[in-house]
Image (tube, rainbow, N blue to C red; front, side, top):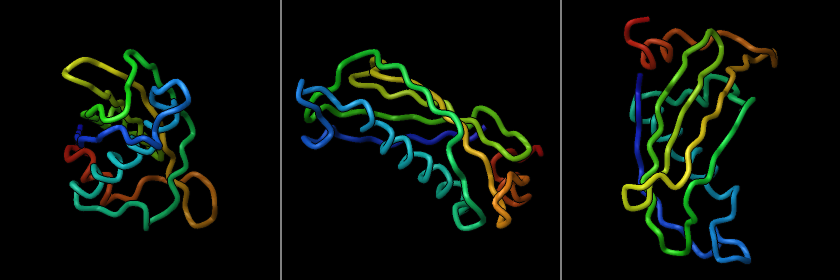
Length: 128
């Protein structure tokens, strides 16, 4: 299954009053890597329909502070009929700082769950 990785640096605006990364800040990075993964595959799946997140979870293993550099790697873990499951891990100095997963569902023009378009399915799983 496809995977994609990008590097981020903790900005001052990413931190909370404790000086550590605000818990929700990583989700901007996750979304950026997801978009990068689709771009690397040669698709702009976001223009073919809506892709709401229906499940998100994260575990925080190490504190991240201002100016820390983070490598975030994402893998397509599950390809369903209308859903995609992703797993991701963020590392600081080769140590796991956080990890998690999320699921998106393809929504057609009628506003209900619909099969992932065949072109995108083929890019996500060439054996399909």
